[in-house]
Image (cartoon, rainbow, N blue to C red; front, side):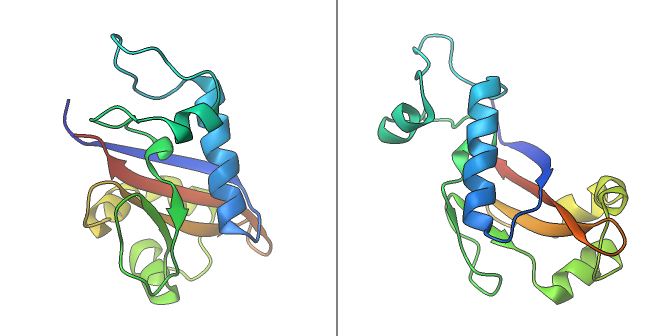
Length: 141
């Protein structure tokens, strides 16, 4: 199937681990992820996490299981928030809005993540307050 790029925008929360958990739960419950037709889908996210994911992944945020710090290396199945410098480089501003996120597709994909099976996160503003989190990455094989 090959690797897939994916992206999401979700409500802002200070705790990125909680954002990841909520987004994974939302995507799992929606069924909007790849699952091989010959395998039975798990009935809960807990069952999914306890079992074996399909060898080629789900091509979604479900393939990401942990958050690392902004200065940590990108790693297998990790989500890393952008540093302030990366945010400016990718979005042209330190306080990107949802419109900036949606417009920046090419810049975001060109910026990485450099590895498969990892993703990036950036806090988005409405011009003054943090309102959402933009998340994107690559997974699958």
